[in-house]
Length: 261
View 1 (cartoon, rainbow, N blue to C red):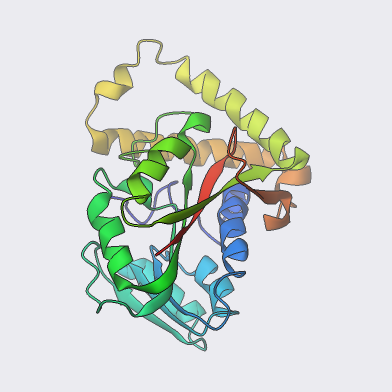
View 2: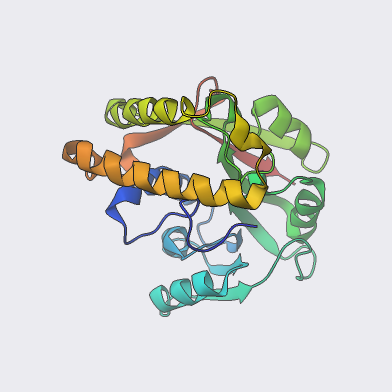
């Protein structure tokens, strides 16, 4: 289970989280091309930074998160918007069938060991012709094992998980530009140094909860260190430093999929 204060969830107030936060928000800006005037369900809304982007274009939004702290933060930020927030564990999605035009689920599917119940529920609540917009890390480009992720995917594996419920899938790859790649290479170097401290991979034998604590602490310290050593461009990176390329996923950072019911 993801906890509220971890390096797994980015904060809108921490400058050290800027690069990964902007990478995540890039998917929301792409989603704006699909949500104009639509009824939208967002799963895993967090503190609402992405929800605010959707709310600028969507008709109505229902936003769900398991964390009451996250929902309170999102509700305070979006009090003037037409967004209904719910604190809820999913699946199941306790909402009637065939009632949403769009379901948004970004950076969440990797937290399920068995994805089929979740995908089946999403297909159920979508109207005929509705779309699931989904993003997740590309496991082929993961820098290290993330103990918060129960299952990561490459394109083929994600396609196999989705196609039994969605007859049409459109894949995009999310890439960073040269400025982002400078940050990524410094990040990769630091991860490599940390991994050398455990040459026999003893940490993989630790209980998952302990690995999550250690991972979160190391990741947080690394982001802070990176921010100070790369401040000249780290603070300036925005969602515009990322691009989505249709049907081009080789070497991408994240997979972005449009699933049509």
